[in-house]
Length: 371
Image (cartoon, rainbow, N blue to C red; front, top):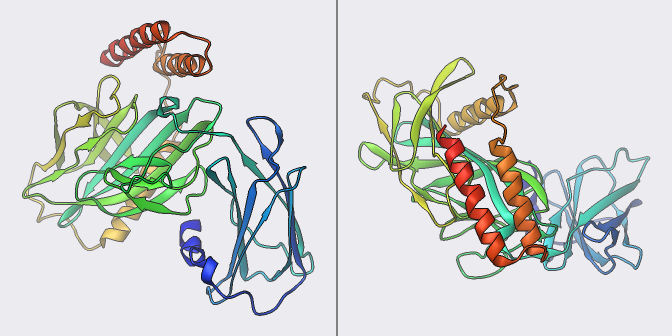
């Protein structure tokens, strides 16, 4: 995983250069997706390390007027892994890790995309936040999958860290006491996690469109319960919790809504009817309905979390059964809200009309969720 590799690369500034120059050459072009033009002047950062991290490279160049960049004299062996990121308009945009195909083909073409940036949280909507919970010996393991819609034209860089810096771009809320946080899967590379007073954050810009993140953590026992309460950092359209036996949920907003079969095991499902607004705290406690002592604890917490992750990813990728859809579905309403917010952001809708229409659409969404 890139997050492991980049743990070796975070100290590249002070690292010694590679022991011997070779013939590897990386060239590429960087484009500003907001304007469709070359991102002239963008800082392009190359990081590299051999497989055991004993040799490391860090270099940076500014893209020329045509958005092009070049790095030469690079080790081209298969034991070297590289990554190229870009810094543009106050945001960091990650590339994907790569190696040279073969030593006898030491030239590689790459490309990068960047956007102009925004700090306006009105552009952000969490369309789905699902928590998958299973008990361990003295804690519960949670795998949380979050789908985020940036419905603006600009990349979002606006969430500050606990020290007030702008380095942390997008935040994720966690229950109090949560630990052992790890990214399991994401729609783009996440090189660094930063602890915050609300949970954790990432340090790369959130591009326009849909992004997905799946991460795991553990919550310790508080007596006979496990407190999973969390505060929404952004408006959340669909909040769900799936709990494995013998857990049941006690919540001020979550309602039990049937079961879900994943990998042959039955999980009870809870949903929060309607939209959860930014700043709302949803009180959630997982309670064991039977004694936990009989549960098989032969597997460690790390293996348990891996199993939860595999089960949840299996559930996400299953084809859904056909459903009768109302004339205006939940996704239609979310899309209308996103379109309305974009029109307001670009000046196409006045504030009074925006507030009125947005409140009406949110009421429709709440009524739809109740049915």
